Image (tube, rainbow, N blue to C red; front, top):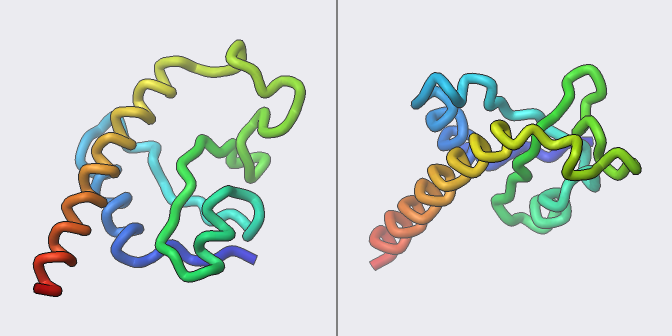
Length: 105
């Protein structure tokens, strides 16, 4: 079974994906608990998400945990695009934490 992503986090991801045409392929794909490192944290009540590239025909990353899971099978343009997206996501998470901290004061 899949655990839902926290609504605020999903909204942030969706907003960032819509913010630039190069992120148009970014979409939430809810994986079963245990299929990502985020699952155990979600199960314990933490707001967590795993960022990865999913082959929709497989329902998982293409080479995940196979011998073919090597640097030779990476698309470096996609890796660099993912890093750009993650930088924006982390910035959004930091900003939200600041807002939550201000609200508590």
